Image 1 (cartoon, one colour):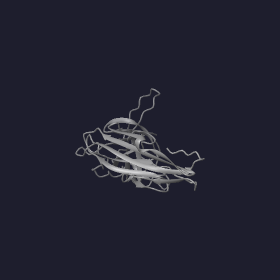
Image 2 (cartoon, rainbow, N blue to C red):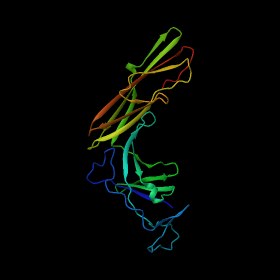
Image 3 (cartoon, rainbow, N blue to C red):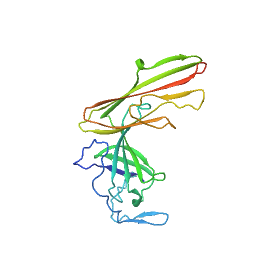
Image 4 (cartoon, helix red, strand yellow):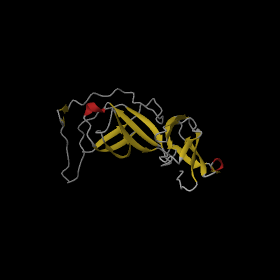
Length: 238
């Protein structure tokens, strides 16, 4: 059966801040929940009136509150959008089942998702979709990209600029991820340039920035890299 997940934030906290932790304590597991060794049972104590009209109806069998942390994330290399997600902790005590779930954020229906707990650790992450209140763009800087011929080799340099703007009236913390090329060929070398303070993983080429955008603030992030390879080779640089 489908579950309904209501995402609510404390009314005294900025709704659009990146990290918003539910201030109310998690509610105790419902009294009608009984955990067996391999199954979980909910006893439906109240009677429900269901019309006999051949249509399906949902019946509530339990209602409880769990803490959640909200995060903004973007990978503009793949999609020039910012996404909001919620991380739910303490879920193990409630025997949540895998399946379809309807999502409501601040009382508004935002869509459906698949609730998966089999691969979850101590946190179940739920995507709440795009947030158009933060815009992001990624462009190649032609003036700072170049090609050099070095004897039998060629050296190409690429520079990219990511521009993020907070159009909200509250500050927002955001994590932006990008990537520079990787080489598995000894004849091709990749050299990181200025990464604007990114956290760089040299095994995956991933770049990560986490920063705070004040209301109406625009922030630019520039990063560059150089690729050196034999002239005879064709190399994908972007």
